[in-house]
Image 1 (cartoon, one colour):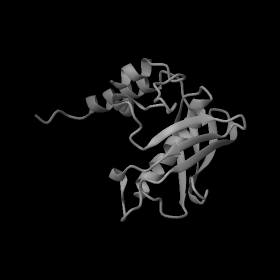
Image 2 (cartoon, helix red, strand yellow; image 1 turned 120 degrees about the vertical axis):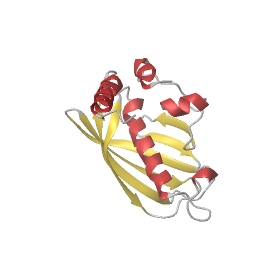
Image 3 (cartoon, rainbow, N blue to C red; image 1 turned 90 degrees about the horizontal axis):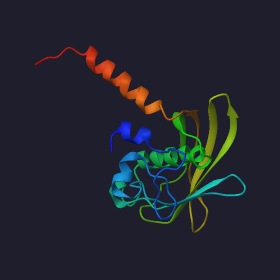
Image 4 (cartoon, rainbow, N blue to C red; image 1 turned 90 degrees about the vertical axis):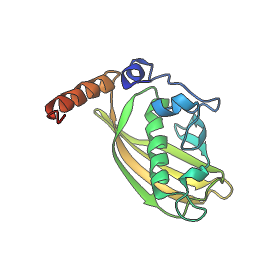
Length: 170
């Protein structure tokens, strides 16, 4: 699926797994979330909750997730908060605080919530924790810029301009 085809799809109702996880363009090709999200839901309390397990291919140190996986999962989870509210957004800023090593293959839960909204931006926070004890493993907060369906088409046009500006060295 090209970004133009993806841009034409309905971001407010993206392809989802059986567990309700909204899939990005790359994960849509495989039908699963490659980061390990298995369920997602927006609660009546407006907190989004996600079941996750870090796949073994994201192991960093022995038995623990790579920090990049933790950051990517928190980016994904917090980025799904606007999506669960029917709004397309892209990450503008993300700050991650690593509290404890994240174990590979163990049941995890993540949550995300809106801290505040301002013109064109949502400030979102969240946490990743162990299911068994609810011990927090990492926290994040960031800013998401609201976008419309034409966002990716505008990006492709900009990228084409950049490519045209590079001299052909053949």
